[in-house]
Length: 89
Image (tube, rainbow, N blue to C red; front, side, top):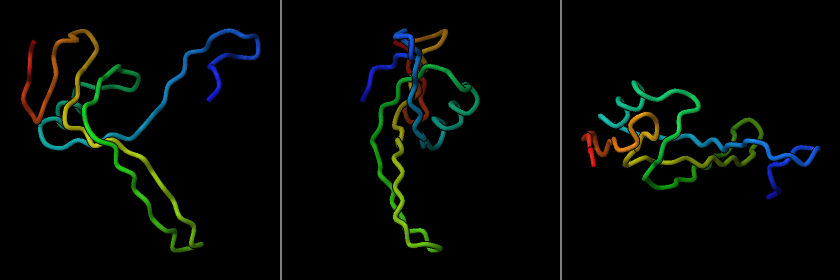
């Protein structure tokens, strides 16, 4: 993996995007409170899905996160949602 520098040698902001799957109250709260670009912490497990394309026989893979808990790192970094429960430290 290379450093996130542009052609001038200056550091650039970079991000990595993964699909996150959540259920129940955790999913509802995430849908209501998260926007693109928000900083969050996710406690969960990685799941690698794979399937074969019926049209051409190619094998595809997709990595996703199955969330058990989502911490919102925005205006209130101490609020978190675990299995639908709000936890304030």
